[in-house]
Length: 65
Image 1 (cartoon, rainbow, N blue to C red):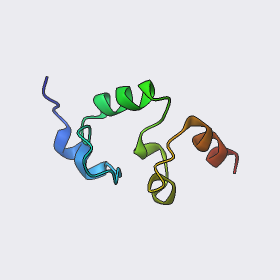
Image 2: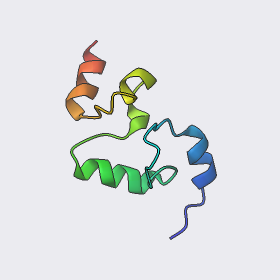
Image 3: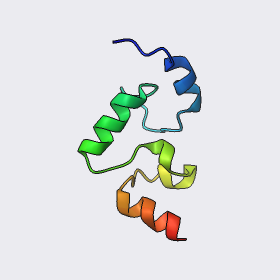
Image 4: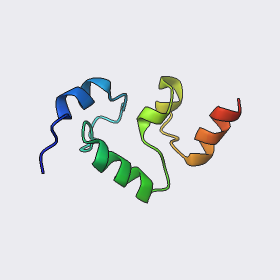
């Protein structure tokens, strides 16, 4: 299945993991990270995303301040 929004998604994707095959394919990315108990890069600010700690716990901690 082809993604109609792949190019647009790529421009907005803040994932810094270079060999990622899910970049620009949001449905695949969400599914992949959900299976790992994580959230995708786009849920995190750049400094946290670069740490690759994409855990739900880290996300909740960010929201609590």
